Structures are given as C-alpha cells and as structure tokens.
Image 1 (cartoon, one colour):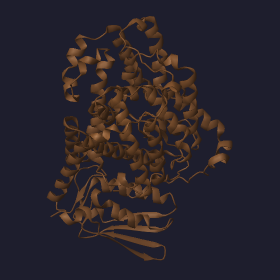
Image 2 (tube, one colour; image 1 turned 180 degrees about the horizontal axis):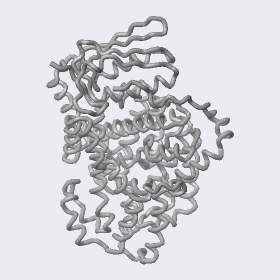
Image 3 (cartoon, one colour; image 1 turned 90 degrees about the horizontal axis):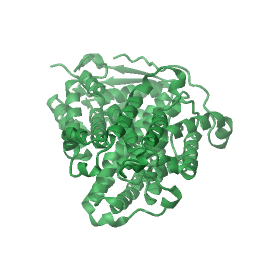
Length: 535
C-alpha cells in the first residue's frame, strides 16, 4: 500500500464564521441555500410520506434542521434534514404502534427520546462511534435500506391502491410486483416512469448548467403540469400528495403512549439514535474530505446539534434528521462556504411552505415515489456489490448477510449478524479472542518523531483504542505507525481508517509512514484489502 498522500494541496484561507462569515459570504451561501432548498423540498415531502408521517412534517424537520440546528452544528457545510435512510425505521415504528395518527404521534414520542440519546452521545464524546462498525456491515445496512425503499415505492410509482400492499414485507412486495403491474394506472405510471428516468439520467449530463439544476426540480416541473393535464384532481385520493398548511399542523404532536409497549419503544429509540448517528457521522467525514478549505468538523458537537434538532422536530411531530449526504455534497458543489447555507435552505423552505403550499398538493405521489426509488437504487447499486467483492470475498459475505437478515428481520439484527460474521472470520484467520476488543498499541516519542507500534491484531473492533493513541499526537509531527512482527491480522475497516488518519494528519503539515504492511499478505488485489500474516 502506498503511503503517499493524494490530497497534499495547501489548505486555502478559511472563511470567517458566525456574523462575519454571514457578511463575507452572503451571496455564495444564499445561492447555495436556494439550490439546496429546490433539492430538499420534494425529497423532504417524499421521505415523510414514505415514512407514514404527514407529508408536511418532512418540511418541518428540514426547516428546523436549517433555521435552528445551524447555530449548534459542528460541521460548516453539512445540510441537516430528513433522510431516506431512516424511512424503514420510522415507518416500522408507526406500523408497530398501530399506524394512523396515533402511530405517527407515538413514533414521534420515541424520537424525542432518541434525540436526547444523541445529545448524550455527543456530550460523552462518542463522535468516534462510526469507527467501531465494520464498513462492510454499514454498506450492507445501507444497501438493505435501499432495497426496502424500492420495494415500498414501486406500488406508489404504479399508483395502485395502498390497501394492496398491506401485510407484505419487503420480500413480499417484490414478489407482488406482477400483481401491482396488472392493477396499475397507466397514465400516472407514465408520470412516474418519466420522473424516474429524469432522476437517473439527468445527473449524468456533464454540462455545467445542467449540474446546477436539481433533478427533483425537473421532476416537479414535468409532473405537476402532466397531472393537471390528466385531471388527477378527480383521481383516487392516494394519487396526489396531501400537505395542508404548515401553520395548522405545528403543535405538540409527540405522544408518550408508546411507553406502554416498552420493548417496541426501546427498540426504536436504539435504532433511530444508532443508525441516525452513524449516517450523520459518515456524512460529516465525507464532507470534510470534500471541503475545499479542508476544515475538520467537531463530530461530537455535530451529534449534539442533530440531537437538539431531532428532539425539537419530534415534539411537533417531525421526522428524525441527520447530516444528509446528497444535500451536503450538493452544498459543497454549489460553492457554499459557511454554516449559513444550511440556514438559508431552511428559510427558503419555510417561506415556500407558508406561502405556496397549494402548489405542493398538485404533485402526483408517483413522482415522489420515483425520487425515492432513485435514492434506493443509489444505495443498493450493483457497483456496491462489485466493490465489496473486489475488496475481498469475506467483505461480500458480510455485506450480503447484513442485507439478507435486515430484509428478513430488521436493521438491528442485520447489523448484528454482519458484525458476528466478521468476528467469526477474524477468529478463523488467527486473531485471538482477547485481541478482538482490546487494542495493544504503545507510543514512543523522540523530539518531533512519534512511533506508534501496534501488536497482535488491528481490527474494526479494537480501532477505537488505537485511534486514541493516534489522536493524542500533536499536529505537524513525523509519525511512524509500525505493525509489529507479532501482528496476525489487519482488517479492511482498519486499513481504511488508517488511510483516513494519514490524509487528515498530513493536512496539518505532519507526515505519516506506515511500516510493516509488506510482511502481511493481502486477501485480494484491492489496496485496502484485509491482510494476514503468512504461515
């Protein structure tokens, strides 16, 4: 593995923060905020509807994520709002609490507690949480979420009666697709299919102006006039989106009645807090790499910010929010410079939701379903399966087991199954049981030279202890990370975390050299493949 840094360009002068940053960067941040508003508007509505929440509650969450959370965030460029990755969990909570208004309000009660748990995560400095979970299991979880979104949105794309989907899990919905096709509405389905084509193919255009127009906006510009031309106002009630005036909907909607079902309540608190935090942390790490000013986010502060936003949103019946990756990466591409872009996107959403909500009720649900299916395709794209296979057959196995158990049971069991399989593979490959969760690393210092020697095994499950040693090294030093002669195994997650540490540390002006990798055999030809000691 090469230890040369591919991101060695000198950091640009960082923009000022707070009021000075607002004054200096008003134009670029307001422009990006407006573009993100155009992207967030339909997606927030679709995510809420797919989660079995009132559609307007998706806007409520995005508005709070923009206007309120901006003042607490630990990331300068991450956009806060509802995420497709939590649809499966939220809809599951609503269903298990009986569905309808009562199910929505009890699910919101769960989310109030989940938000408080996320605040506690941040206060306890658990921003390192994402570093514990094996990457193949995380990718498997996201791919499973994508498949479930696709399964649940195909009936809406075909505009079949929602009653036909009752009682079917994700696998059952895929089996029923021929039945749904036989009962589809051809005109509305055409709107859905054209919308899906726009979502998939528009981003592939390389023209710089095309890249500045969000595909969801184009979908609305097509779908609303098409619906009017087809007189869909006279179609069944499930054909068009129902929104209502946001000012009439905002109240204390959270209901603590779910506490009467303690097992369900605790399960969904854990899933929302854990999966939401993981997705947020992974997004923040990705956006830090994209940030042209190479700023480093405070992940603990960002967890606190997301927790505050989730607690407030849930109290009024909103969805859980995260630092959302598609909107955040678009924010970077649109030239945002400070936290104020997130604030502006919330302001634009609020103004539109109050002043123009009747327009939203002209949106065919098939168009929203197309947007979400496109999100699902991205999460479960065949390239994800191929990528796992290239890293190593064991990574593909963990990935597939996580997907299968998630589809069959739920996300918590899916992630647990992936982790258990990863641990079994490590034990078979020679890692001792003791080394699974106990790191063995020591640091030797001579002037500006730091040597961190790692013993026995370097794994996803013991990386946090090793990371603690690495994080204690001051910026701008000469660092050697030595894989000792007694090390038996280095797994893929550890390899990737090591590369991220090298990249981040060298941005401070220091240098990182990794010693000992040549003594270990890679599992595959991939540069980040797991490595084991030959026997």
